[in-house]
Length: 502
Image 1 (cartoon, rainbow, N blue to C red):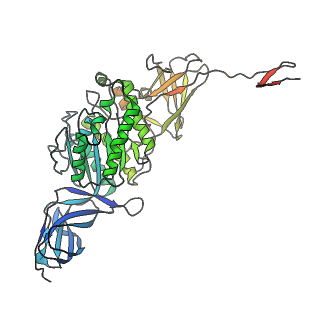
Image 2: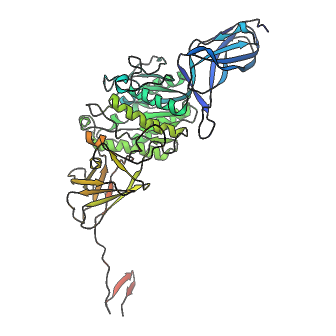
Image 3: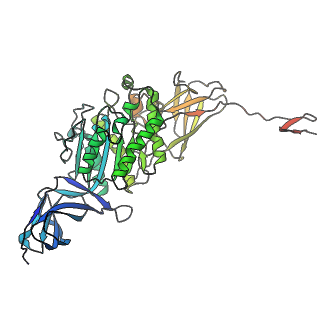
């Protein structure tokens, strides 16, 4: 039948990816997403239909005509559609009352898949750019091939103009290896388009991200423009707060306010993936304080312990630039892989996330130079890229100076890490065992300790031993000798009770 009026369609942004709402088929599937388009019919529409074509091959119909609405009044209005999630870019056609002459089409490609938001300071800035690291290495030189089904929508460092959607690329707006690698892996694992959206500012404290502050306002403008729906929110911040006088309780409260306010503003609920301070070299000591680094890390871990929707990425094996702070372009590949693993756990793609085994206790026998650290779960471990001894420091309890030399670390027994000191301390000396106390040497960054938990996610290494933001204390190694009671010799057995041997 013919349509007496005409249709006008407001074009959506190119490369726009809409967050999928449903996951079906086992633990997770491709699902679908809600797409809202602005349509202006000049006459009422009895039946509105839509079809999807392949943007890379416009003559190919991916989804034939289906009902998209009915009894629409004339005038500008928002038309909600449910479109399938897939690794595909769509061109969308709309028609009124089955009339071929009424067809209007999008010229910009759109997709449905996963949208992940991110914010923070300079490490987050380099999720999309290389402004912080200044690393000139290209994606091509690193062997990173961005997925054609990925896109980013982000700004940084005070640029409050809404950005453009684009696929990560050398010479493009988003040239960071992080965005390219992270999105490439998400697309491959989920089978749908993926986007990384957000805002970051170099050198900012968490106070500048509180609700109503300019950084928060700029972030929300981008998140809203990107559709206001995302499956996960990455918060990567902490360096600027890791200075002398750092207060973990104050930071924790501020972090709760940042995430709580966003959770109230954006429905989902979205998962939270946190990273405070990954590997950090000695050059960073000119800006930050080692004890404060531990405090900020501990505050993040405390937040994760309080929020069931949160997980943590430690990134202790991320290669940093010469400044000892910012991941290089190569380092950001490994950094992205950590976040990819953490994200996949939020959509049912794996059970372990990015978290590895935990250190849970340490003991030393009298007269021994050997400290046995227990690991949970009791799995087998291996060192990759160097000596496991680079991962630990041992001090007299309560100190972070006067380290006792470590002769070696043995990982041969499942569920334990055996640290052998160069000499046995006094038996009455309590000890503190630190795992990755700042600052990290390049050898420590390269020689991580991992389990063997690979789950077909495309990464060949297992999960790295989890960050411990405080030391394990080893009690003094003292003998507990049995007391022998001879005939007629009294023994105090309990208050007010005396025993005798006859």
